Image (tube, rainbow, N blue to C red; front, side):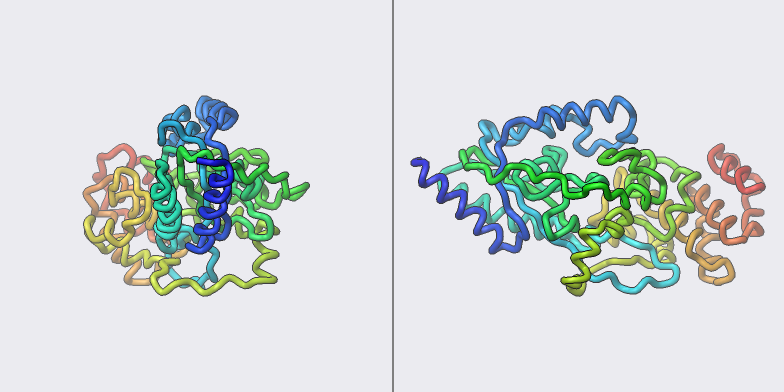
Length: 369
């Protein structure tokens, strides 16, 4: 295909992406992300991944677009805006990070698929990669010139902030890049580092996942006791580092966030979550990443949140705690111990006098029972 035709094709796919709802579209070369691979391997070696597998599982794959499409030449990268006005908080409601209020990744995928369809119709191979271990999407977006890496590790778009989900179309079409990468726009600002409730941002651009509330909510095993109070009412994700970010705050002042869509789930009822059977619970939070798709981890998170924001004198809360203290699952019983103690209901723990699970006994010992 002639060079002029390729440039025209590049213009067409960018135009098509914006028409499909993408806030920004750019094109990056599909050469392997060698520096990113080195960083992933170093941080995994140092334990900073905290057991997270996403893009860490196989850095050689997640940093090489050629593993996704043989002969890959370019990445068409798109950013989908999920900034919406936050509904008012409510007592005993679990907080959900903004990106998960609804399935914004589905919207992003649909927009990118329109680009992929156009490329295929022109005779090229094209595959959409969204929220996938196959590609480090922030690096792809950075290389496409969409924005810069903030000190909180998120990508910030000029004048648009960081409330975006990112994805790519990997193609063997030799599309010209739209970069270069943007220069750092954070300057001396470090508000995100000091705002992190657990100090997980250990240096500019360096996240220790072992302290990150968003990751701890998705990790297996007990929720780390030293970070439970810091969790507050969160049950999925954490937005604190983005909430304090000056570009995000400045945008809200000049262009208030639009209202959330009707199918938004910005909060979940903690007591309702704790009352559901496994199948109903997983259906209710279906788009969340839940370790091994086991409902016990949603209940674990809900109990920690309830211990932080619940009312120990509320009969409905007491009933939920009683049920969870009698649950067959030790993970649930153990976190119910913590929640009951947090809410001043040590009296409920008498039912566990003969407890034989070592983890639950450790929870009882930690609250003085």
